[in-house]
Length: 131
Image 1: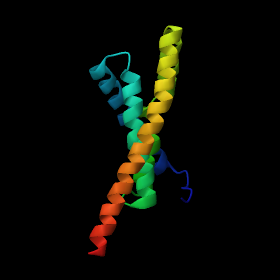
Image 2: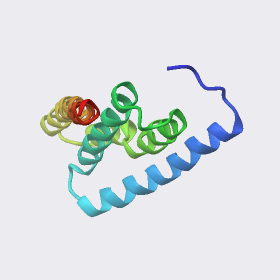
Image 3: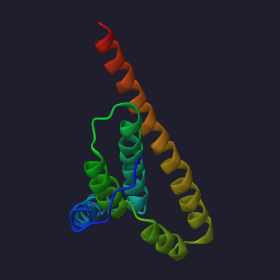
């Protein structure tokens, strides 16, 4: 991946993505409304990020600018480490330990599943192109 110049259009793309990512996180967290709302958002965001990052490597459907807006902007503000940290701190030690382990393990698994989904799609694309 080549580094992109930091210019105002790139900052706007990231900012717009961040705006919608933060709103989406707020709405989804309100809809889930459980102690696991942040975990749910972080897992969904990690899955999407896994797909987005590996799309560029294997399929190439997503342009670098779209990837920047979705990856850094939208998913960067949709997922949230700071809320996860504060919520863990406010929990009982046993529940906090579970929350920490669940966030780390399940978000890593979600990235791997997102990558796996892109690998399957790339294989289907290769089979179509071979015909």
